[in-house]
Length: 557
Picture 1 (cartoon, rainbow, N blue to C red):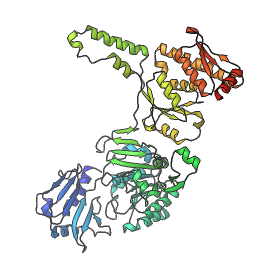
Picture 2 (picture 1 turned 90 degrees about the vertical axis):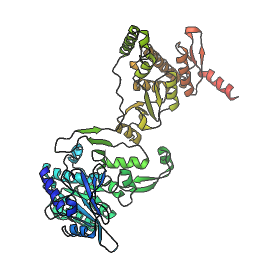
Picture 3 (picture 1 turned 180 degrees about the vertical axis):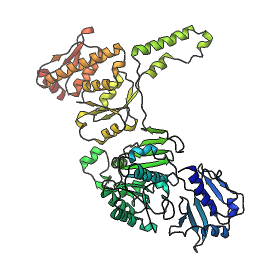
Picture 4 (picture 1 turned 90 degrees about the horizontal axis):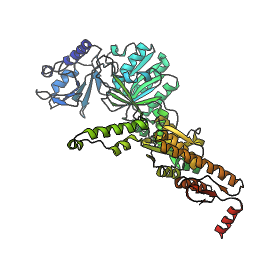
């Protein structure tokens, strides 16, 4: 809608206002005004988009002023709303107990383009979309623009169920802002559900647009429409998806909820109570979008999955879409944020890090002694910063073993209990294809998942090394990890032979730290080991055969 059209619409609103108000108003003053409020016995107020409220310098409002307006607009409907034919302006009444109008809210309607630029890809998919948000954040504006986009650009048959004439304006001729979309007016708000069904049955739409689904009957009508294969675009009362789930009248829009009693094993597996809440059926809407403000949207691309996560108390992060510039019929600058903290891996090799440190030291040496105190570079701090710190989430993997590996090898990592804080996940391979929800969550968070085949020290240490990319460390440390892995693999093979009935087996000589890891690996298999030999020849002996039986008998006695 161009500026000339808006100015013409604004003139038509000003024409119905009393002269004492119109002489104080001009187009420039109303440029960013959302509402004009007229209450009996008070000064008129204009409310700006910024939240600023400004009182007009004139006489307080009297009954004659309100009568002047109501005589120039169509009669109010049962929901106390009226409008000006051919415009998007809405005038709502406040009545006293006797039914007389004692206040008016004149809402200025504007056609704003570009409001759906950041979610146009979702609209083009043909999936049903539900918008949530507090009053005044632009839900109806987005419905209006989507109606025009789908009808004009995609060439689909669009029918708007316009209960308050807010989408397509007042009067019998729809406002040009909805393009080629058709509009069905609703005589009274309580008949909205009936008109929704009538639209499907009588007018063969491919898309139906509904503003403000607010009752259980309307929610059921929406489900009926969706089940007939019609794309549904709608708004609903509620600021967030979580609020909607808790609303008993409207929860059916996202699948409804039911109480389920779990078996003992399932409750233990989920680490939950035996009675839990679960989604009852498939949601009416495929996508749910929370309107945070006029420029920011939070998109749940899979409504069913989002509801499941919320009901189970799992963290769920919507995709944040933003339009950075004011909509002025120019291409909008769009930003898509994953709402995740991403840590870029260091591209420096260990030698490059050392070279940078040496270069910094050289610069310090060239400075005057008095200036060196001003130089804040610190070698220890730099090395600490250069090392990549990671938080690891474990799934069906021994926490004790991982903690020992981190401690003994002095790794710059820690274990976290919260998946939303994790940088990577280490899981048991048995759960890779089991459809575990926590692994789905990790995939949604774009977290790398590393799998261990067994809960052995050797296997877990190998995977931890891969996960933390130890190869970027120094050659000395790299050699240590290689030696430890080889030693643990040797111990594992020896343990298998002992368990198969072999006698005592002696391993290759190792240093004290690696021998300690080998001892722990042996203990995990309920076997006995001891260190024998001196100096560089000191090594492990794993007890088997008759010696093992003798030790067990001695222990039991």
